[in-house]
Length: 323
Image (cartoon, rainbow, N blue to C red; front, top):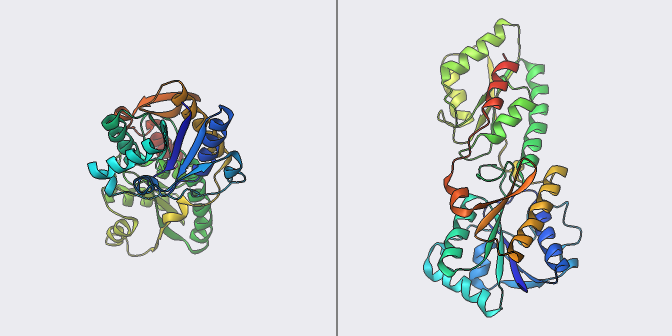
């Protein structure tokens, strides 16, 4: 394989640039030409492709976001859009594709690789950590640390004013960010989509804390919670507790930005190299990941369709340490 292309797709995640750097540097090391695709699959459809050199990725390992930019492509869902993308690769004699993104991106990789028998390797880049086939996805560790920093600051004001804070973190329909942030931040309760927590459970937990002379409490809630957003949950709790000062904080997209942590930079570098070597070895149609600190390869269909369960030990840890 002499020529490969690389793109970033879907939501951005800290560490995407580090993965891109590793792909370009690894391809160059092996004597391959590498092409960057701007704006994800939309850029591939439009032919927004340019040749990259080793110096193209200098000084980007510490940058958040992605220098290639990213997008969610509607047109790529159609056969006509995918045909255009394939033709742009074929016209440049590009023989393989590395794609960095989340579960929607891996689904697009599956369809593209199957439709054209084209070698594609995926790198899991999403703060949600919800892809099967890897213990950690790129950006997850940074997002947790960003959320944890915010919660540490929130606890200062919660303690100063004897307040209850409901803090919502990202994660879509997965509770990985919430559970780790809750443990690291010493939250009184963590509400995640994977486990059922009723409003009465919240009230009982808060009441138990007050009985132990706790004056302030933090409840971490994840997106996709059955009881709704942090605002929804706070309003329901207020119907039963009207003698406490309740505040709501939604952390939002600050969790997707910022310089990647050391862990994410190293993870991204390892996965970027593994992706290039997988293409060279004919091991494509798969997502590279890391399991028990070893590089792993999972076919796209399995990575997309297999649920990734929340670590039950972490759920139990919250219950015991914050009781």
